Image (tube, rainbow, N blue to C red; front, side, top):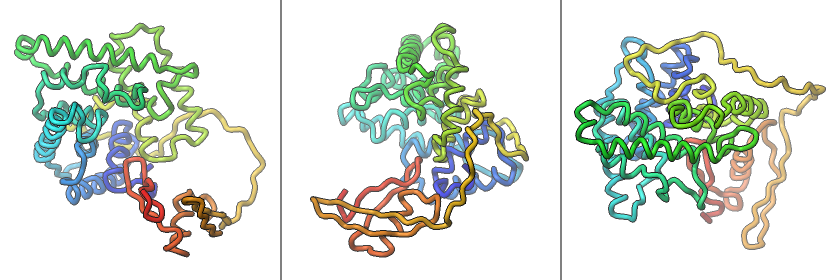
Amino acid sequence: MINSKYNKGIQAASVLLSLRLGGFLSQSQDQQLIEKVLLATRSTEPSLTSGQLALAILALGACKGPDGTSINYSERVKNLQKKFQAEIKNMEEHDGNPLTNYYQLSLDVLALCLFRGKYSIRKVAEIFKPGNKNYYFNEQFSVDTGAMAVLALTCVKGKITRRQKQTQRKAMKNIVNHTKSLVNEILSQKTENGLLGNIYSTGEAMQALFVSSMYYLENQWDCQKTRDMVLTEISRGAFHVPTAAAQILPALMGKTYLDVNKASSCVYGSDPLHISTPEPVSVTPTVSPSQIQVNYSVVINNQIDNITVHVANGSVFLDVMEQAKKENATRFSFTAEENSWGPYITSVQGIK
């Protein structure tokens, strides 16, 4: 996770947050990731989405780093407040559609809640109402979006003061009811093998269920069954992308994003992370060549361009595309952009 080629810029925030919550970083590794996140926020903060900035704040403030590490939380939180308000304004002007999505809005509220940012409790209760179209993609409930909303709503409820309880009774009641409904939706997406939604939504769904156990019966969710299935998928290589690994790790350690506490000293370890996984079936080792040959074709409107390239053994498909582009930039051109899950292709031969 720490040294992955897909762990760059703001992507490092999810890794830093996850490993800090688990206490698996050495002090030098922690500093290395902090510098990556700080550099990304300093150089690109105006262009960061609200959720990206929220994630950076959560990561940098997950715990108190070594003396001498100065992080200006207040300025970043103020910027997040502005980005969050822009999301709300866009929803008011464009049929309830935020600039980003509800997953990022939930991250915004969570970060603002944990770092004493300003937000309207009434507005939070209003926008996170279950049944809202933003919880669904192609009419399918998004488990990770619902899970992040549960974490955000739980934080907001926990931070309500005695005075606010008197003035915000209706909003508080709505927050409790919304949380219950979202938890039921998450549980309704439980599969026979124990996953919650799919393998990649399960980690954050586990976090949501950890903090909302008062809203469901013990027999409604077998945590150990879910954990065992996740460990099986880990042994199959399901979490080789840093962001995917970062999303599952806190839950495996019994942690949630609500454990973020910038006043609590970071716990550093010297040993690498070890999580027991089912023992793989032994196979006879084979000698692999250092280079492999790949036949790569691009088909556009029945026109086929073929090329044979040689790449290092263990390369991913993007490596093949990059090598083909090096050898013939006209026939095999493409563009790619980075997101939290790594690079994704945005166009091939100019076609988006």
